[in-house]
Image (cartoon, rainbow, N blue to C red; front, side):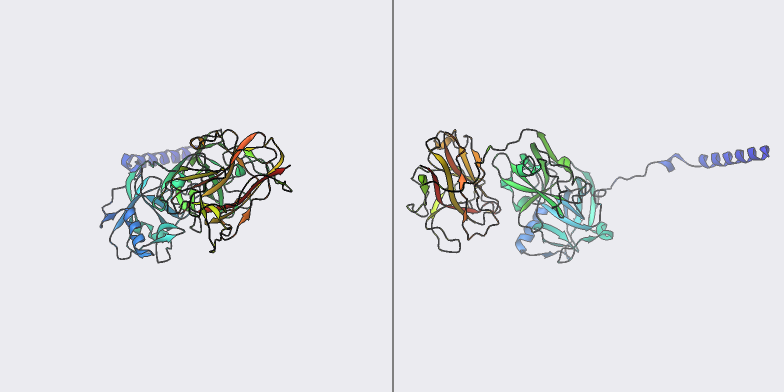
Length: 473
């Protein structure tokens, strides 16, 4: 029996050796996965030219008869689950000038279209239009997704994979021209209400809160000028439950729009695109004495603007009316239209100004808070579609009274006052409430600072009236 078993083993070994000896080395080589540079049967055009075509037509464009291709570099990645069945391409790996979204009914896509991969999209059979506020390529006039089996009929990969260099841009300089472009915001942070000043003292997650549905929306604020933008993160993202960083730094992501297409959003590929290496935040000091129950009878300062000349800058009564950036100043206005004024009111807005940045101040005369008790502030505000522009109520103890030093003085936030919000009805006027100032000591100035620009998304107007600072006798 033992002899038979050994004979079988020897026979098996001989067979194996024979098979191995017949296999050449080349048969075990790694498959050749290199991509040949495609030879396209048609003209290659730029994303900018597609954008110009859409703007010229003003509606969805049928490209079915086109013989052209559009080229671009992939800047989105669904590897972390923050993009779904779409890729974003821009016209250059660095200093891009245009981008476009391509809808594909397949997931994942990053294994085929990795970040930096240059691709060519055949336009024949596609439609070009606006979807959720951004330029998009899809099939049919409804901009539906390209079917998964058909994607390679439309999309051809180049052998080039480039390093994507984010376009450095300030929030106030967002525009349609750089939608679908990979941008970088520098010296920014998440607002205190979502990081260090939450109800439980813990920062929110990117998109894992109970009230987050489909997307988590977190507010990014620029340290330089307090302008804000929303970071939108899918509730399906792999990093949805990771806590927001509480420091400050840079964020790199694609500039897009929210679901309704009416406000800019930033979408990152993964949490590593949020690089907050500075632990020091840039939050202003907040002065919050709360809200008072009543108003004293001593008037320290008031202005209802009834003596001002309409369509002229606010002057007199101790006001400092200062334009820090841009061309827009606080002016007197009177209106009986839908957005009615309270007699004569003060207004500021940067619509159609052409300003890259608009910052305008209206500052009260100096108030001494040691000469009396129970100081309070009241005023009323309204807006005209304030969009992304902001109006802030600030207080400074160290401003020296000269206009040139307003930007360099220390300005704290008077947080208890209500100021009209962008989604409040533009025809109404809203009370600030009775803002308690009694916890302030010494002397200082109260300032209203407007921040906007000529961009339609940041150019709204605010109206201000019936300002009263009172105290007890």
